Image 1 (tube, chains in turn yellow, red):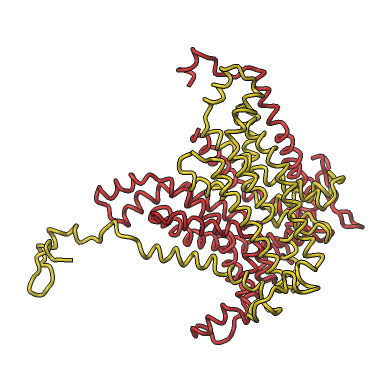
Image 2 (cartoon, rainbow over the protein chains, first blue to last red):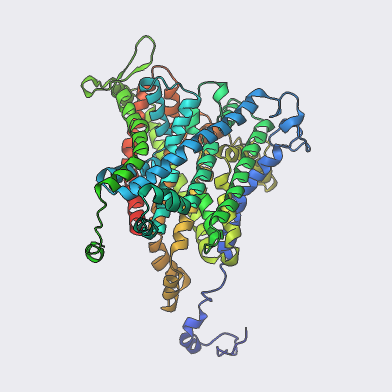
Length: 312
Length: 310
């Protein structure tokens, strides 16, 4: 910071003429690091993540309080013979039901959505584009309204579908089929048509092209959508809440909600929430590395993998 | 496309080829008809039906010839009649959703902007931290605030320590502030990811050009970055605000009192109350109708951007 560029007067301030001449140089360096913005971002991150860290911490609380720390213990996970997740039947059933719904939904929604995406994208007709719009619509309709629609259709029209696991699974599949449908279509756009055309020129039938060319190329997208479907089912609340019928088909999110809302909150709920969190993180981290492995050799796959498993 | 390739090879797929793709799409289409379009018609049929007077279950009117206005009249009575309770709830819903969405944008934009533009080599780290809440169950995140907002929780203790309050505040006892902030906390991760993706896509050369042509930092932002981020802001706001309209659990967990009831709570309550399900269907239709324009806007713009990518 030497004063080589500015003529300084006796008072120690640049004189008016110098200031006018060098006016533009007095602007702050436009390339400097925006510390204010970075500080704001860190504040946001603290606000968004520290409460969750504390909630995880309280799942290890050696007491019934969700707000006063009383020492570390495993009692809410397995040590308590009655109230721990391991020993309480409703808590256990909640975990099982969530995993069950996640598996059923993923196994059906992903093939359904992938076939839909391929068909719609290559068919290119009036029907195809209409149904593509219908599918995108399921992305923005408030979940409550969709849940209400499902509730009515199962209680008034398709009455052979009883509320419970079947209704929940059907609702979740419809709600989540847009993940594979949208992600696979995006991937189809980036792949382009040249591989398909090359295969056709070499004499492959459409089915052969699909199996030996398209599906391998789409593998990362299909995988990413499976990860997203499974994790959104774990996280889902509204659909499973409106379509459950008894304690046997109450998933974790509904259990936490109804207990907390009913005034039966306590660290066992935090323990259940922590189990959900660990499950999601294991899927996310496993998904990230598997995606990178599937796309190995492609450029920029680290960032790509990150956005793929976040569904961006 | 047809001008260049048309002479070499027919572009229009032949009939059997199209049939193959139609066949692939068919299961998904049938599924969407049966379990997406028909269910929405079911809302209409229930709303236009009537309620069984003895048992209180809704009777659907599947044919337009049977439609009655009984449920609509009941809903109108609740909105504007003598003992109307739904009117104030609607106003509150709008106020809460607008406030929460604006707060989301005010917080999310700077953070997403920083990560997209200035995070440099630490972008990966920031991205992981931004994505983390997306992977944490909504219930767990609400539980976290329930812990903090207890009367003897850390929020009250921190505020007392800073002498900002003298008495512990009962945050979970029905305060609108708590509900709005809860909504912000719940939905902001989705907005931030959409904004980040949009801002990250802006070509840095455009911003450098702005600088080179003599714009300051603020002027560059206002005249280059902000107009270019209009699309992600719009879609991001929709993706945040639309689910908020149907949210009933945030409100229920963080307040659970009549003083903060939103439309989502009303519909949820009516759905589980015999005799009121028909009216719940009417309110659901109302929400759909009001949100139709923004939803169609989202669908069309999403579809257009995926088409232009091709």
